[in-house]
Length: 372
Image 1 (cartoon, rainbow, N blue to C red):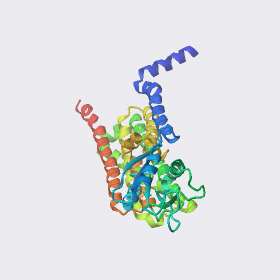
Image 2: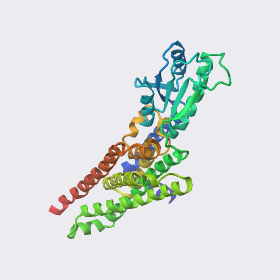
Image 3: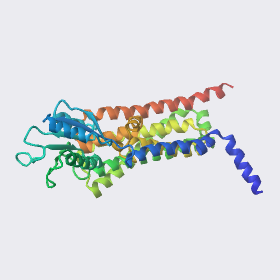
Image 4: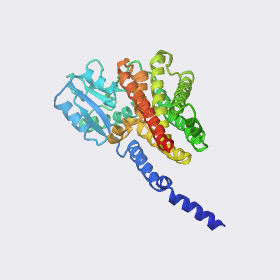
């Protein structure tokens, strides 16, 4: 009897190509993706992007920068010809993790400048504190290597935030958005599975044979999922506001629109996904795997600046990245509404396009049987 049950389950698995892929192919793919991401985050492929403005531009500054960028974990991405303002802009926009400004000529670099300022100014973003801390140690090493006679008590650099309005809760703001978007995808998937339940128990056939049509079902579910998702994200940010001090009231309008756009994207993707799946089990298993992968690539698990450049580029294909960039503009960078228009447009377009595809997928099979 045990052998018979074993053989029944084995045959069932072998006949289900989707289950075979999820059992033997998908785990390896998921592992490879997470290995690349987390190996970068743990130091193997970690590369801090640094924008530089060398206002001194002499032999000492060039020697220092050469020593600094000899470190394999630091990548010079821009000369920042526009000077200090250009460096600040690149850090604020996320094009650079940290900025360095070598201040103008003010005596030997091995000695403090006039007025007590350091020769190096490091432009930081509170949301990338790990990158700033890492670069701090590398700067000190480069300084000591280049100038072994430098005073050990010397202040090697000054720190300036690229976002003066940022406070100590920027990390909370990041993870509020990261967790909220990942949870939003899981929640939308769970709600979308009801479509497959209704298809399997024949409810959709009864609706299709009546005065309504299946497109109405898709629309109704989509609207409900958007509303539910918005409320769920609101709960996360309310906790961040009340418990951790996130300044939500000052950004309530743009935050509400960002959350609405993210909810539209999540709901639309969930709807089109379940309509393309054959069974509830297939959608549930594969859907959870996909949400984990998308969330990892999009920055909901590991901050994007810790990822290899190739993974960061792939992240733009996920709704997580667009939503997190919008939240970053609100709570860290203090950008205007013009910086939010693109993320809003992308997220809303993803969701609405997915709903249109879901309607087409749902309605197309009905034409065949109805004609017979």
